[in-house]
Length: 402
Image (cartoon, rainbow, N blue to C red; front, side, top):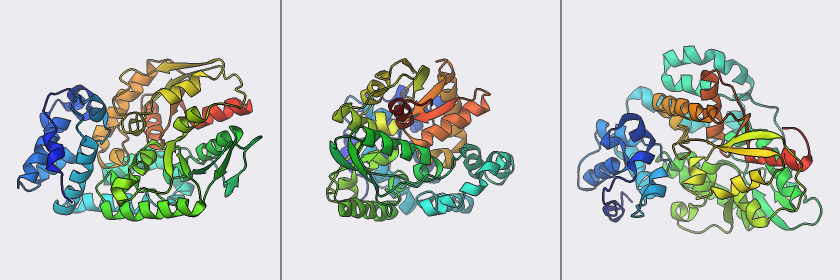
């Protein structure tokens, strides 16, 4: 397919994107800004081969889409960077060590059953991080980011609505969310049920393809996307609720990836609950929380107000805003594994911003952000509890402490 030159020509190089771009904020380099990268894309379209230096600037992009929000010309940088990453993977030959690390990441993370094999070793991860860093920085980052995994929680195929049934929805369980944050999926199903939804959870579902889409692995993304569409179409639902920002963003673009509209619509959990309207009683949660905007929720999906409205409706819960909320935390799918130093710098910057809020709890809507910011807070000696929006709502609806 290649890179669409018409999308490149939409950019007028005005510079509104610069202060929103995490890598430009870090380094101040023009080629590490959206308009600089678009210039490189244009050179490639005109016949310039992808050199290692060019690939380095393109790989350094987080794909956070903050520039899409900031652009007054409506440049589809989201489509451009996805198309460009396919070209990079097609034409750029990576060094053997880099190929090996990427091979590990993309043969592991999109496959929940393989991730499950890591769970018994998670308690060793933080201790092993310094040794693994010496082997390769990406392996060290993988260990340092490892969350403290709770016991696995099996979800039934169907969670019945509490009280009057208002809707029937499918629920994506995801990969990292399912294996490393099972309590988030359990809370999501309970919240939907308490708000009057029958929740259909197909046990055969796998990865939605988001990580592969964001990394230019088009064939893998298409294969995983098609399997996900078949699973939920067979389940007979017309709405699929997603609780991971990166997954929701990619699934909303299945028509572009797969060439046809799926037989269901995709909505983020907070988006759906705001649309549905509350019926369940909210119990007080006397907490001060800082809400973190996951990039693929705020920038890619435009979902900002709904999570804040849901949290603000909980009695005695106070929501604090995080400074520089539009700047990515450095997670960005697999970015914190493949670009560990830049991700670490952004994570430390985000941790500092979170610390200024004085919040007792950080609320996020994406598992990658949760791991990234929690690890950065630990490095700063300011360990903070982290929860998903679903977990906060679940505690309030059930009247239990968080």
